[in-house]
Image 1 (cartoon, rainbow over the protein chains, first blue to last red):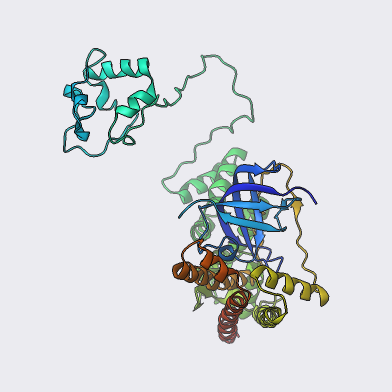
Image 2 (cartoon, each protein chain N blue to C red; image 1 turned 30 degrees about the vertical axis):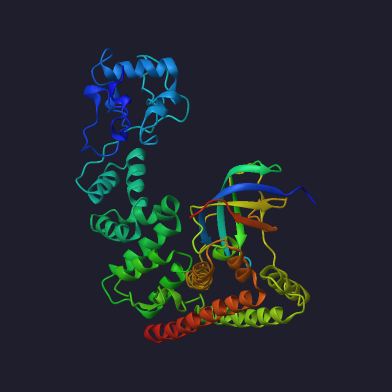
Length: 91
Length: 380
């Protein structure tokens, strides 16, 4: 397995996946990569396919806030792999 | 040199005679056009002396003299780049040449578009179609009707698809229905419903409103109209919504079963148990993805199906249940506290929350089915 990538990222946008391709993960969260803290990631934004924005980010409204996000390569579009998320700032 | 600095009075730490900020002044703000209080008196005045001091001892030292320290940032202010026009006779910048200028006469977009169709040169037609394509549907329809009365209908109907795509072609069709001079028949409405199936709901509503067929039943935040019922060839959304209800019931059973499994203690384990169960039952969840090589992530243009606005609203309702629950846990335990994390990740709480979200879906979708059946009766 490739090395995990840890980034500081800001949630830019959340929307219902227009394709509704996965009945368990029906949201797309677009995050801006503010800083790559470990590993390698040649991307400025990543889109995550997730079940619930509030549950994934442990926050009722995560848009506009920063989180530490752990991603496991390959990082596809949208990313569907394992996610580790911690808040990176107070709000 | 800076007399005011001798005092411990915070408001007077950097006041330097005439440059002193009046006691009633608001907080300091630095604007590009505002030299600030520290350059008063010119280069030889107290402000000028302060700038000299800044050059001699550095920004940090001057910053330390300010009180409150964060009221003004001592630093070189950014200056916007000045535009320098290219010298006369310079070659044009690289890139596609600008389109030839065409002036369309008229006080309104309708008059200007009519003038473009009257001039009928390539450039004038480009501009006229540009005007049409830039209109929102609610504005486009009366504009097209106006152009029809002015005698440009044959060229517009011929070029609607190549110049404006399906949206324009459907708009032209809607104007034809509106202006045909006789009541719209059920068959004509059914054909229009087919045409609207892959259009966005606001455009569907504008078209139905334009022809006087906009009947709306609002269900939990979504306006349901005739565009969701059966057309001549397209099916009603009822079946798709009923399938969604069945899926919600299926997942309620799946999550309840996952919560009963031994060793399932966390939310992540609940999710994994559900995925494993689906895999065992042969329900593969395939996600079509493309590898991002450049990082320029683009969410693909939204596809639209007849029932998609309903399914999207359904997902929003599901999420609102989760969102309220997370907010309640934060209120109870505090954001990010160990107590919050423990409650948030508790398997039984996770299952309850998911079942509540699916139940909210069922409640919403059931109301949608009832509303759609009412609309279908109205159309028949």
